[in-house]
Structures are given as structure tokens and as C-alpha cells.
Image (cartoon, rainbow, N blue to C red; front, side, top):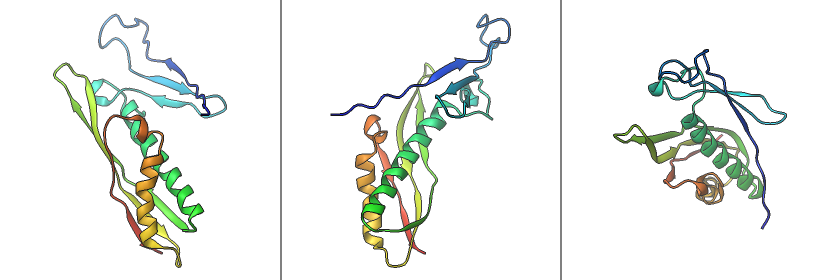
Length: 155
């Protein structure tokens, strides 16, 4: 088995001069840096005093699942001679909040809208979504179901 290492540097940028001296004395803002890539400006969800203009961890989890599925799907289509000309996903995730304020994702639904070129096998293109879900390393790493409601259209 081969291993891949990923590294991120997270820096809290929300000290307003008093640190965490009070619950509202600081912001939840942070930067996530990856070597050689643009910095991601993050915060908590606005429900937890976060900045709504920044990405929160829940956004990034949903985006990671959607992107991973898409990348596997495009690969599978390429090797199966299915030509994708357009791909868009409107993913949704559900997180249930406990009495203590902690949350737990209970499911994610990916809704890829895929356009394939004439001559491509639409039935096979639809079926490859299941295989992409089985191969996606992010989906395989979470403890909740990741469903797919794909629509494949001949372009």
C-alpha cells in the first residue's frame, strides 16, 4: 500500500486584542494555508458567531465530497470513452445539532448534472456515479451516507 501525506497550516486570525477573555471578545476567523496555493479564509458557521463571507468547515467538507466524486467520475468516464462536456453539482448536507451545541452530519446528497457528447453511452454514464462513490477517498472516510442523485443528459 502507498501512502500520501497532506499538510495544512491553520492560523487563527480572530484575536481582537483580548484573546478569548470572553465568548464575544474574539472572532472565529482563521486562514488555512497549503504550500504553493492560495490561502483559504475561514470562519465558523454564522450560527456560531462566524463570518458568513468566509468558508466554514461544513462548507469545506461538502465541497471536498463533491469535488472528490466529480474527479473520480471524470476519470471513470474518460477511461470508458464517455465524453463529458459539462458537469455541475448542487450538493447538500444535513447536520443535526445536539443539545450541547455539537453537530453531526447525518448525510450528504450529491446532485450532479452531467452533459455527455453524442455517441456516449448514457446508461453507462449514469452507472459510473455509483463506482465513483465507491472509489472517492473522502466519501470512504466519513461515517455518514453519501447519496447520488445524478442526471445525465445527451448534449
